[in-house]
Image 1 (spheres, rainbow, N blue to C red):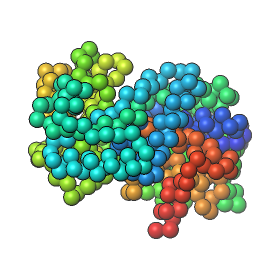
Image 2 (image 1 turned 90 degrees about the vertical axis):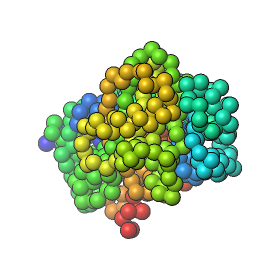
Image 3 (image 1 turned 180 degrees about the horizontal axis):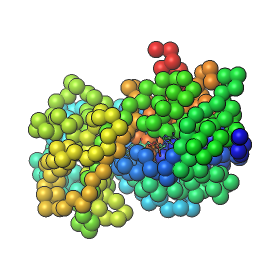
Length: 392
Ligand SMILES: Cc1cc2nc3c(=O)[nH]c(=O)nc-3n(C[C@H](O)[C@H](O)[C@H](O)COP(=O)(O)OP(=O)(O)OC[C@H]3O[C@@H](n4cnc5c(N)ncnc54)[C@H](O)[C@@H]3O)c2cc1C
């Protein structure tokens, strides 16, 4: 027997689903956010915490990242729950001349598109970050970049959504979707069935299982990554810092080689580090495909620690208090899927944000609410349409 009726039901209370649900509730839709566990129990509590434009490809990827930061600047006023948002910028550091040349090309392209980035010489990077290894040769600075607490972000959206009348149905596992005449008609959970004409699949790496419920194949794969957390209280960095090799690791640039150990190479490790409000540092990172397993392997920790100490020798004397691993929802073209699905009226996907789901949560929520309302989105998002995989 069907229980409540909802205008829209959003599956998955991670950074994407909770933003999507909040933005829909804000538009006046009777909305339910449906989650099999607790809020933020998936990747959004097993990740780092930054919203960057300087880790995005020039073009729509960066445009989404920048628009999301603009939306975050509004949200930090709009949401009453403090999600530890800061606009601190981001520093990239380079080890070699070829890296500096590649960095310069990247910065030139982004500056030509109007973004605030600039190259830095050796002296400037050490003035900014005195703990950096002394043999680094420079880097670049990206001014708009931000950080936050992703776990609190999900609670902030849910809290604001509830004030607008949104229902948050945690511990409700989606088991099926009922179609009538090919259109979305109901959502079946282990706690009951709900009538609705619109469902948004925001289940991150689990989005393909929801897709199977309506007979479609969503090509998202879990791409694992580890985070190591330092003991508190020793100031090490002032904001997010990444080695330039991070770009190669993320975008699988095989034409670029780094002078790294076999262990670092084998585990696709690139140094990233950022401070938290609780005065730890989060240290990463690696990218690998290991199915849905989120164990933290010793060899990966060793490789991440090795790479971090290479850039920050001070870390040799700092303890690591714990680690966790998470699963990035990876899509082959590194763009998320954000659209209604052709042939299944009322079924939408907002998933596949890989390493950018925290960064893109604010703009994704806004875009989906615009799509559902039949409004024009702020910019052309046809490249994000699921159609690109249906035609293949
Ligand atoms: C190590 C690491 C570091 C990262 N660092 C950053 C970063 O600094 N910045 C950034 O932007 N991104 C980062 N990311 C990526 C980011 O974490 C993800 O893109 C983002 O968390 C994905 O959010 P999501 O809401 O799509 O998925 P999730 O957070 O996984 O949410 C999906 C939810 O769906 C629920 N669900 C699944 N199946 C069902 C079902 N049948 N019924 C009900 N609920 C269901 C799950 O329980 C889960 O809570 C990082 C990722 C990793 C792994």
